[in-house]
Image (cartoon, rainbow, N blue to C red; front, side):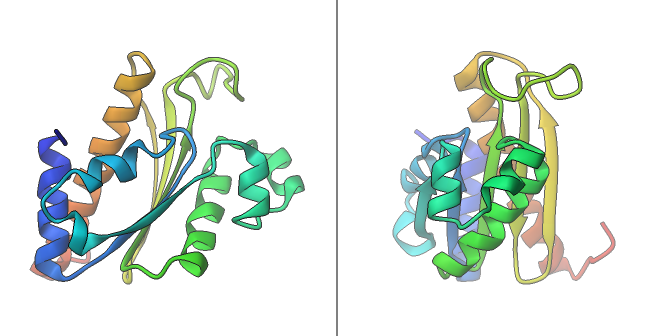
Length: 167
């Protein structure tokens, strides 16, 4: 069963008549899956792309290999590029991209430890970039990331409804 954050976000998206699409690396499809398990899924979920390996980011999302090598596959820069590329592939009201480090063996460093997740959310009004460091095992990190994304989208839409552009 999806978390309360995902259920609330999905409901709010449906209420607003919005749709959502995902480009997922570290979450490997779990983000789209969680949204697909809500009652609103048929109304809001456009689709998702799992681009776990850098070669998929290059081939499908057309992110240059040199760009990925320069910034690493798990970076704010690559995540932003994924989100903007996703916009060209899937029509939706909201586009979300996520990369990060759920286990050792990626581009982790002292400044970017395991648990570091990069999120890019594109709406009609904003481009929201988040860098979060979560703790726990891989599944806990993924679920914390999903809840952060759902909460951020709901907060963004609520502020739009209230006409608050200053947050």
